[in-house]
Amino acid sequence: MATITAANWAAPPTRPPLIETLVSGVDRYNPSNVGILEDYLYHQIRSQEYDCLANLAILKLYQFNPDLYNPDVVINILIKALTSAPFPDFSLCISLLDERPPSGSGSGSGSGAGANPDEPDPLPQLLPVLSTLHALLQQCRFPRFWALYRSDEVEALRDNYTVECVGFEDAVRDVAVRAVKAAFTSISSERLGSYLDLSGADLTAYVEKLGWSIDASTGVVSIPPNPDNQIESTVVQENIQLPQLVKVITHAAQTSLPVVPAVN
Image (cartoon, rainbow, N blue to C red; front, side, top):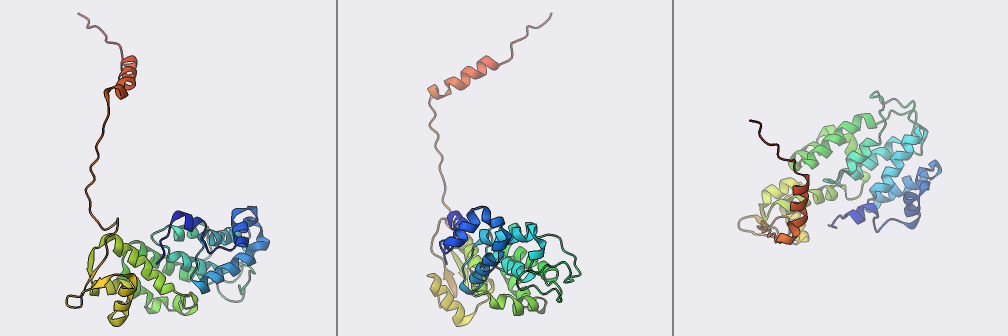
């Protein structure tokens, strides 16, 4: 599991030079480039790569050019952003979505690549589900996330979208692992399994892949020390010399109000 840094978020090492040129310059607002950015999104879907800024550029183009709008592209962008929790990518994407009628009619949906004006827009129906899944991840309610994700309510999202997003479930598990690493030094395998939606040999293999150890007799998983799960006292020692306070004392004396003599 790769560590996400601000530098990697702004400029992923897997970003091709052409996309870097589009995202970094004024060409990001050129509607003729939307097809290139959409193809790059589907490359991300197939390769487990992720480039938030490139995907935000697509949404911005849809915002400026409603005729380019493609609901399938938007849903795939939200799915990729979903697994970036606890980072705010999903909220950034939502902020660029125009309000659309809940009827989901195809009229006014645009004629972007892959959009079919004869079919209803699936986004109004799937957006509340995606928002709920995102909220559960943000709140670290992982068992509830998996229960909802496996339910019939999310069947359309699973069968039509996340099934094509390579590594989606593992990306969700990465979110859970980041939270567990920050909060635990040890955790029961049963509890960890509920966070990862894994059990038995699958859970054991996943724990070993993380480099964590599991006690076969107690079922307790030990998590290696890291800066987040270690409680260390911090002693702050200030060393201020009197000469350093001269300016402060002088300024206070000069700006202090004059003393008014008492009136008999």
